[in-house]
Amino acid sequence: MEEAPKLSFHGGALGALLPFFVFVSGVIAVALSGAPDERGFWPILLLALAVGLVLCKDRTAFSETVIAGMSQKIVMIMITAWLLASIIGILMTLTGFVDALLWLSAQVQLSSTGVVVAAFIMCCVVSLSTGSSFATILICSPLLYPTGGMLGAHLPVLAGAIIGGATFGDFTAPISDTTIASALSQNAAIGPTIKSRLKLVIPAVLLALLAYIFVAYFHKNAAVVNNTQMLGDPKGLPMLLVPAYIIYLFLKGKHLLHGLLFGVVFGTVLGLLLGLLPWSEVLSLDLTNFTAKSFVIEGINRAVGLSIFTILLMGLVATVKASGLMDRLVAYAAARTHSKKQAETWIAGVTTVALLLTTHSIVAILMVTDFTKKTGEKLGIPNIRRANLLSLMACVFPFVLPYFIPVILMANMTQSGAEFNIPPVSPLAIGGHNFMSWGLLIVALFSIGLGWGRTTKAEKP
Image 1 (tube, rainbow, N blue to C red):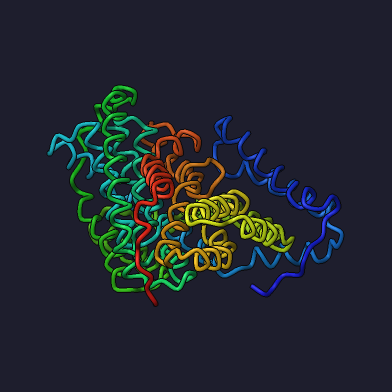
Image 2: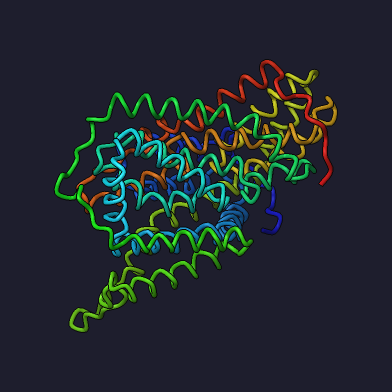
């Protein structure tokens, strides 16, 4: 994205922040009321943009800044991934993979608590392999959520386990965008950075597992189990090759588009050859009504809400960057940092503010890169330590607050249980049950407060 012009607002800083206050308060209100999906956030975002346009002194520059923010490459990458992964989710459901998982779970006599633990572990493996929390949620949710729901798992904790496993890879995977952004922004080598995170992530995982087991066990009768569907059908088990193939491509270093698009093609061919996917689901035409039907169309329709939300949100985020507010916050924090503990507290605090304002982890990390580097170098905080602090914050709030994309995405994906009579879960409930992120927050507070792990040596990329 080209460098956006500086924006000035009537009312100064308050005028620049007012659109975000409108956005955040509106989204929270809708989320707390149990928003059916992210489409309910569209009017709020448009209202926030309109407020910003009214308050901005140069409305042409404001408009150009919004368009530039919407057209960033990262926006198109995210939307493409969501479209393709959503198609894969529909495909896996149509070919009976959920019924196959039910059958397999019945064979091993997996309890409702065991389903939650298994979902968390499986999502940890997938997210570690792909490095993408979004892909993990999109691929695993349509498979694990309906299956776990029908096996009697407590739905909020089941959804929390899925997004918790996705959070694990976002913090730990060497190919995670959060890992790459945090490490490279602080001139830290990715290999040593990942190795240093083991002592941070292991306690968080153990805390999360204990919480998932405890909550799932004492709420195991909360879900409604359909006994007729519990029998399942093993015919869809070969479709396990589809996510396995996608993970293999990611492990080989293939591009996100490469892996997901090839996954769609491979899954379609495999479903047709096995007789699990009717040709009518691939493409059928209603010439009388001039309409077409396809699992591809259904998958894209499911991802449209989130895609439009992302486009509008990134336009709003660009206006805060152009206002210079983050630069002023960074300067204020830098002038008040005099010890390592203070420096780490400010780094975590400023990153949190950036996350709350932008609702995007990578944008937030890049916003505070210079402040984190200069403050850390000034107080002798090694680059790996700084990178870990950035990632810790980036893997907490975006995965627990109801107006962040990962939580909204997870809430949207719980609608995959509708055809199995499994109700969806609200964004607020999902964030509250993401015990992986809460575990990382506890580790971060403990680490900053006591200086645990502060002796990490600096590394060069």
